[in-house]
Length: 307
Image 1 (cartoon, rainbow, N blue to C red):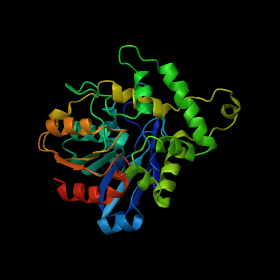
Image 2: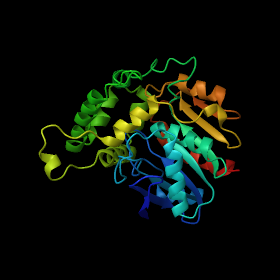
Image 3: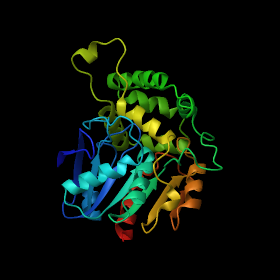
């Protein structure tokens, strides 16, 4: 089932979709960057076995959700709560993978009365994380993009143009982004994305994230920037609007692959040292995309840990 809800505190709509057991335990799955509600997820059969009602939505600017200019990570907590209200869900859990990880932590920090458990999977840490060199250990493509976004002098025009070219390449050939990332992946990630099912879900995810160009847009020499992608990257490098250290009363799982080059393990260790009572799971032989086959276990954890 899919639908649209009114975005909180602003004009615009949020698009969401559901899978699994309609009477099961509700869990929001927050997509990566770039991404969409159609991103990788366990099979419907597996969701039924887990007793999970899985809900995903397009963050503003992605897919069918309207852009929210100036959004920050903290806004994700309000967006999730608005969809939960529309679905008459008083309590729920949240799992965020990669770019969805900071937003999952926002839900735990800002909606502790409604969020029963949270998992942040291969997530980055806040940009103002004391004692953390934020870019160390990242793939060259990430370092280049984030370096354009130095917090005191961000070159967002250059970032927008770069991501617009990437988005246009994805529209013409959805496998192009995955192919470009493969060169930077450790071997363990390459093995994961060679799985045909996972690869198909990733390609659908990337194409849904940037959308198809129609009408006059398709005729432009310079394609428009992918709003959601740009806004995500900006939000990660600006103050998040909460402190992970202040999460209280909500069980938190941090799951990470030690060989991750897109969200370095130093970010995981920083968060694990600061979120009170967090369950920290570090997989020595895993990297970024190993989070995909691990999702059923992570969903089972948030279901069983719900307070």
